[in-house]
Figure 1: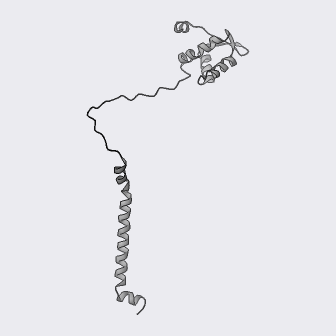
Figure 2: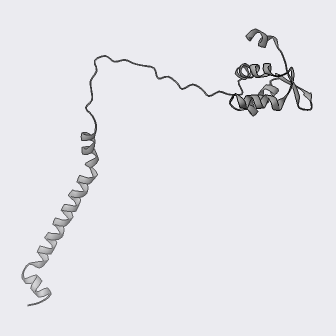
Figure 3: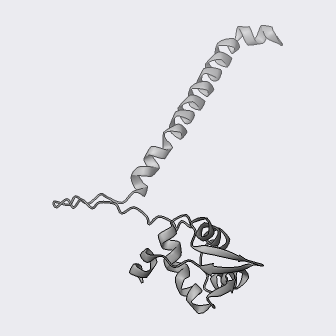
Length: 140
């Protein structure tokens, strides 16, 4: 006896189906174990939690806001010492060079905001003058 006849005679089809079911059940079990393995690793990976009797609530501190060149008061406070180093009528390029030397943030934007706020008056040919106002004298 050979071929399919021998397989049928010795219950080969049942044995083949049983083997396929065993393999499928094993693979499904292995898949389930692997999918839940992260939970088991997390148990061993985390340190034990310490229970503290006293609960201290701290208000989280907000990070400081970045310096904004649009804040005229802050910009004037930063640039007034630089303007004091220059002549009363100064070249705008000299003010920019001082701002770069002292590493002030956003020198182009800050100087432009000072111009827009009326703190720097153009005299012509790139020469400017700082406009003294009573609020600036009070702050000094």
